[in-house]
Amino acid sequence: MKLLSIAELEKLAKQPRTICVSIFLPTYHAGSDTQQNPIRFRNLIREAEERLIEHGCRSEDANNLLEPVKELDEYEFWQHQSDGLAIFRSQDLLRYYSLPIDFAELAIVSDRFYLKPLFPLFNSDGHFYVLALSHHLIRLLEGTHHHIEEIDLTGVLPSLEEVLRFEEPERQTPSHTGTPGAVGGRRAAPGGVTVFHGHGAGDEDEKENLSLYFHRVNEALQELLKEEHAPLVLPGVEYLLPIYREANTYAYLMDAGITGNPELLTAEELHTQAWEIVEPYFLQAQQEAIAQYRELLGTGKASSQITETIPAASQGRVDKLIVALNQQQWGTFDSDTQTVQVHPNAEPNDEELLDLAATQTILNGGIVYAVESEDMPDDTPLAAVFRY
Image 1 (cartoon, rainbow, N blue to C red):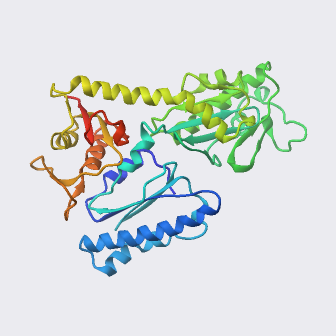
Image 2 (cartoon, one colour; image 1 turned 90 degrees about the vertical axis):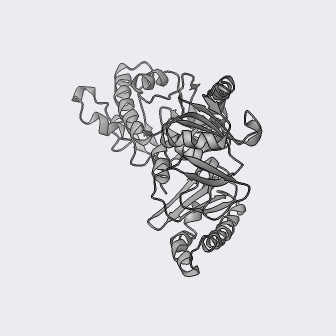
Image 3 (cartoon, rainbow, N blue to C red; image 1 turned 180 degrees about the vertical axis):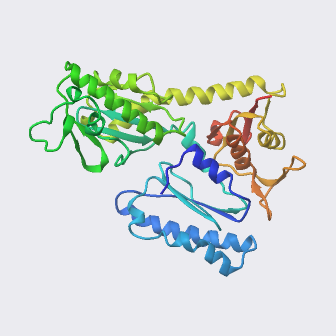
């Protein structure tokens, strides 16, 4: 499975127009309920096959297109799930993502991928990271409002000894007794976390070594999160936090941190404390977008009309879009004439217009807030703020 970033989302959105299958299902990742995962999966595959035939595919062609998706249905595949599974299949592409979103079951066939259920990862649902620092562990966790999970850092972070090996000999920390092969006191730990041992908070050599190491950790995380705009929360022993902050160049590191030894906290406890820090950040951005929309409505710089917003989005004029996550609006958009036809029910060759508006906004550098209907600013499925 690939990591889902804004860049990866854009690749899906830019796929050539062809028959595209988008499948979303909620998944269990623990307990006996995991047995429901393959059952739901097979039901949605059958639904997708039916929709392909309705779309004009022969039964044999529909089956051949979905065969690589069916081959995912193995025991090992279901052992590595999160809250939701998103699958995208066209003739030339197969992508699937295990994500911390509890999707509604959905199978859509269109001439482009249906991406709207993914947008909460990048805005108001609270997609964030936690980088937990202690004297013995570095852990990276990815969370949303309702879920958090640890990211395997195997092969991502350099070891402390790798960093110090190229420094002057007098700057290297001797190995600790009882930790064979650990230069600078670092050893491997289960799950790909990074482990290091230091001398103590007052040791200047250790501070210098940690500063060097944290600069390299920052470089590795910048590469891992280079397409991200999600906030990063830093829990750690108090004297470690300013050392890492000095090394940090990730633009979305939160000012507030969690002080204390994160080794003593479970992932769920880290999630609870981190969410208290990031929730106001997410709510403020969304509320500011809604307030701006209401202030500009009627001036020509905001709209709740689909027929006006979709052409604006395709032209790159939408700066912020608030869109109802649990609604669909079917119709067509002619990019040559910039006209929109809205249909009360899906018709052949229709596309989901709310998804189209959101995707075009993202592709043109705008911000999308995908929210539940009750959180929309008006009784409308979308609300847009225009750049001009």
